[in-house]
Amino acid sequence: MRILVTGGTGYIGSHTVIELLNNGYEVTILDNLSNSKELVVDRIEEIAGKRPDFVKGDIRSKEDLLKVFKGQKIDCVINFAGLKAVGESIKMPLEYYDNNIYGAINLLEVMRECECFNFIFSSSATVYGDPASVPVDETFPVGGTTNPYGTTKLFIEQILQDLYKADNRFNIAILRYFNPIGAHPSGLIGEDPNGIPNNLAPYITQVMVGKRDHLNIFGNDYDTKDGTCIRDYIHVCDLARGHVCAIKKLLENPGVVIYNLGTGKGSSVLDILHAFEAAYGKPIPYEFAPRRAGDITANYTKVEKAEREIGFKAQYDIMDMARDQWNWQKKNPNGYSK
Ligand code: NAD
Ligand code: UDP
Image 1 (tube, helix red, strand yellow):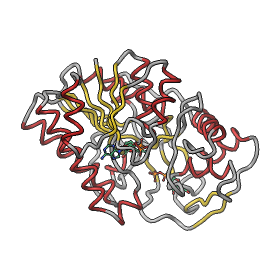
Image 2: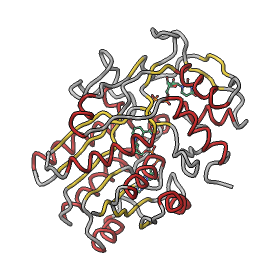
Image 3: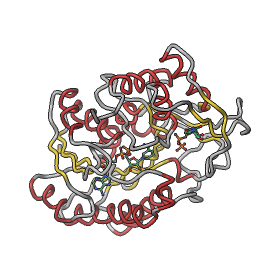
């Protein structure tokens, strides 16, 4: 069975490709390398002992997509390709709507033309907006996104629901990720953000390698156990495995299915900092700073639906996540650049 992984040289995509290869799937990656490097393909081969096919291309180009679909039978598509920086999306909404929404529509049109009907979409817990309570489950209302990035996820989810209503040959898994962190334990692949990291874990590891002075913790006056925000951090290797579980589900012709992928445990910013300190063996400098606009107090998931329906259960805890992300950053202080 061959899986097309768009965005497969990116952070979550690369870890998922390894999981797919390890489970006997054949893989073609299509990525425009706007936020990743082709070197990742070598690293994947080094880890998995098998090389995925790689095509440099854009999901917004029918020509690029047809090159892949006409050359081989694709049984399922996992669409990781997208832009994902919240702050940037506020400044560049048109680019985000074009890349993420137009890209997804274009990809689905080519799939329909080439009679490939299995689709897995990388959505996000951000579609829940500021949930009325935690933990959230898949029946919670979606909407109230606070930035164009989040809105692209919401709109694509709606497009997928509408597509299935019109054409029930499609089988679609919408996976709502909570906060993926960590790296493959080999330290050969990991998250490599451009410029100053927006997200917590890569910012912390850049402080650890001396690239940043200290961590700013955005807000210590939230209504939580220690005043800092609560999130559901999930090891990227667990998240990758969730995609293999979803492929198996699609083979049962389920229509549209939605799963939250998280651990079910909420951790505060200070919990995460302490997990990295344990991996580091010394304190990590930090300061409390004002709240960041758009942040919500707490978000973590119920895990029962994914466990019951696709047999997905996260195995790693935040200590594992911190250890593996630190291992990656320590071995690659400049990410994939020399
Ligand atoms: P990433 O930026 O590391 O990977 C995305 C990949 O897609 C990159 O390699 C990039 O070059 C490629 N790409 C972007 N636009 C493309 C296009 N038009 N055509 C072809 N390739 C394109 O991001 P990631 O963290 O691996 O995220 C993967 C997906 O998961 C994204 O859709 C993201 O929105 C979603 N997601 C990520 C998180 C997170 O915290 N990392 C959380 C929830 C959802
Ligand atoms: N955070 C922080 N300092 C940083 C980056 C993030 O205190 O430099 C906090 C942020 O306010 C949030 C949590 O860490 O409470 C997770 O943020 P991230 O951007 O990683 O993920 P989000 O849940 O916002 O998508």
